[in-house]
Image 1 (spheres, rainbow, N blue to C red):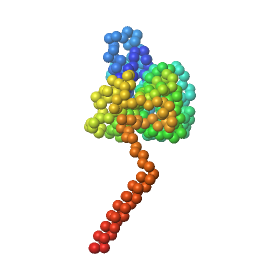
Image 2: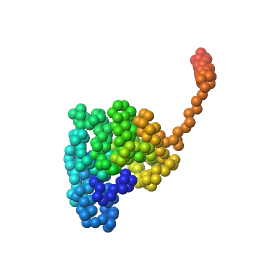
Image 3: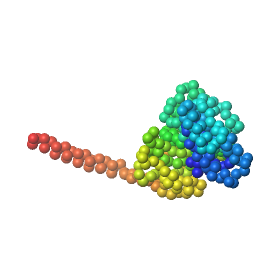
Length: 301
């Protein structure tokens, strides 16, 4: 995700569900690799004013803070608290960030008191976090967010409304479809990564389907090699056996954003009604014949 987004010196980077701060640390290492080309002012900005995050649980907060300091970030802007308690209606441009990288918790449920902080209310934490990220992304900013498969295919009122806003008010240009098992042993849920920018509406979405040859397990996890092609094609958005493009107008018909690789879609064979009836009658005769044989066998016994 960081290789695709390619953070630059001077940009602010945010994770509202920071955990052990893996995204922020990786982003720091990405910027540190360019240290020889940076000015003293740029490096000081990276150390003190680049990385921001929230973490709800005390243990993960301590681990995240320690992780950032040990990797060389002198002044981490990591805060302990539940991100979802913030009313997103109060967020102004000064509160927004250039880059958002996150893997928010999913599968949880939030109380109605928390839901009131969001224009589109839902008890699904993943939907509330997605609204938060959309609201905290700066104009021209870039986001890469991990979401469970359900966010893409569910089309009930809340999910549909959030996806409608995402397509109409943001440029959801890329969806990376990940295989099931990426987060084993913690979760076997199939996930996707949404790449979007606050730069006008979506015209079309480029999909990439990551499909390792072997099933992912705890001892055989996903690797950089599995995603190498995705990173290479990210900017060119080429069409391959694993990647394709769908227009936003097509997706807006039902707001089902799940990946459906056209290379795998088989043309359905549509039979005439008379032919369907003939097939049914033929199968009925076969079943009837088998039942007669069974009856004869039972009679012999």
